[in-house]
Image (cartoon, each protein chain N blue to C red):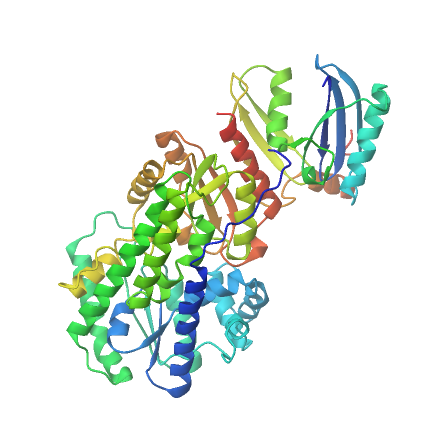
Length: 148
Length: 414
């Protein structure tokens, strides 16, 4: 198989990306996850495919991740976002580093060593404690845009 | 992790036998309470049960009832009831769920056993503070409510070396309980009877130890989640021949599984230690979750806490004092670390899971740097999940599961 798709069904947004065997990004899409994770996964994947200009019969190896990863029935494999972030981050920064992910529901701190292996990680203990959803809510109350 | 779901919990055939002896036990308690004879004592689970049995009491263990409330997922109906009368949601959720269920006059035992309307009322309450102070506060609530005496033993805690003076104090405290217990039971203390009960308790404890040690085999024949259920007789029936007999049957089954390489987890890939309390309301769910991760939770502090190998019928008072003092929960951090290190080596474990139980600080050993020290020393990773024994409001399920899954992925990439 020459094409791969990653679908990250997060608590806030769902992200899909399609790459080829040379790891070139062919298409991607980001949409609100809403209440129906299954639909969000299908919609983002469809849009990423459209952008990638792939033929309808093309096949993909699909890995799902994120809070709603178990809702992607067409995924060939699932991984936690902790593993996926570490891999993605090491691709761009191939050295020992610490990665912080402020997600909608969880915040994670991931340590990656010089070989790209995770040596440890920490997550917030409780749902929505200091996470992206909280920051969005606070920005709203402070009449400040979280996008800027 | 693959999408493939396997999650089939394998049946343990001896469970039928277990159900029968547990039912007999609850019916015997119920009958005693209804007929007023023999007298009923309530006892903390790691308490001087053998003394009570030797005096002819039938013994109810409120912690066992707490676990029943947790595993039947009724605890969260009752915890707020105890909160409303001033017992904080931050204290032991066994205490709050048990007291709440008493106030509401409900128990899952009624549903499980026809004819049992409530928990057998006590004639005396006997605690040992070796595990925590909460047992004392718990029993004192019942003492005030029901007008029955609460008496107990105060154990030295957070200790490394077990000093003679600690044990002598406990022996003295145990002896001091006898006049009150004689008066309530109507029976004279008989040291030979005490020796006999202690001897049966020792046999039970040694058989239970063998059951747990069966998991040194690869693959492990029984999961931690099943073991928490099968430890029932070691908690409530030790001191009786039925408990000894049961563990013989269970051990035989496990040995057969070992012979056939029939592990609790099909294609076992990783082996973990569970440090801390079970999450009673999620036993099945977590058992299936770990099966899908091809990870066997092989050994635990919790199940090992009912091994009292120091019991010695030749020296009943001193040996009982020692047995109930040398357990994990009573000891200092150095002892606990060495203990877990031995377990990791003995059971060939790949990682340690610490359960930080919100309402049970004494059974949560991640709070003073132990996971970090052990990871450094043993060169195996550890993980902490936040939850609780009974109060499921304290368990963030998605966080915990993502955490565990990522931990297994980390083990896979090692």
